[in-house]
Length: 331
Ligand code: MG
Image 1 (tube, rainbow, N blue to C red):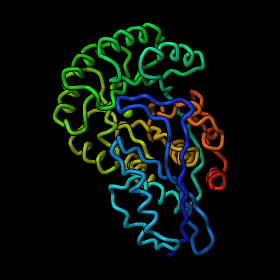
Image 2: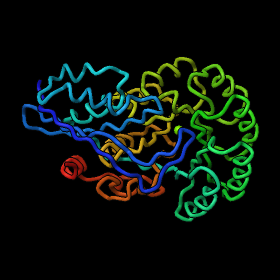
Image 3: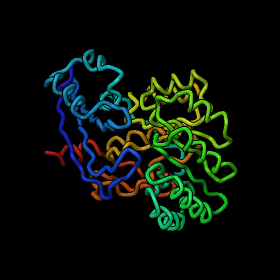
Image 4: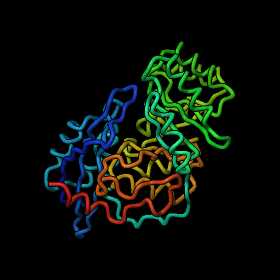
């Protein structure tokens, strides 16, 4: 099987800069690709890397695309190395010819709160909007300052609501211990990636020593890494960003077969990849945890943002025909 292959780069300014422990993110860059098979069927895919989380870089992804040329065999597409999880996700998406499964379920969405003090005002506004799950970026400001803000957030959180903390691998073990001791018996759903992925013993130790649940994110960027942590007996949550992890069907099959405790999360992909991911997640019971897609209007442009998600994700958050629309919008 041969495909005719084309790709276009995109560069989209974020409506609001995203500040995490990895730095400030202002422009999302990626690649939209188009595969047309011998029967004339067209599929689109999106490559949306986040190199500082450990994915391939955009340049590496583009080099892979450039080498495919205008005509590419299915064998060559299948030979992309596992390290290029974003490229593999995009190619599998563009090659999918089966009709998507119908949406049968709804899932809550976790609203993202900015790092630092602005989170307090945002929390009130998002509670008003109906959100009950929140994620706050920590590890950006000094521990004492952030622990003070945490008290303010917790004092505003009504009983059924839960707060996730995401340290983005910023803490030392000692800092993580302070935070985790503080989080005991608080309505903290989990603490995400307290220390760096390389500190595997510390991650396992912290997970065993404190009552609050821990989640891996940077540690499990690709599916192979999630499988490895599962084999190690990781007792917590796996935050999966399917756009980074590899072919979506493989990720879904792993969850369905082994029932890990997962959160499905955004990689700030456009409506194209997001629709593909949400359709799969909403068509079968994979998780009860709130989706990590509560980012609001990421780009401030409906072509890239697609339908905006509210506190509950259902069929209405799927873009009707995002591939063609986004492809045609790019030069
Ligand atoms: Mg994270």
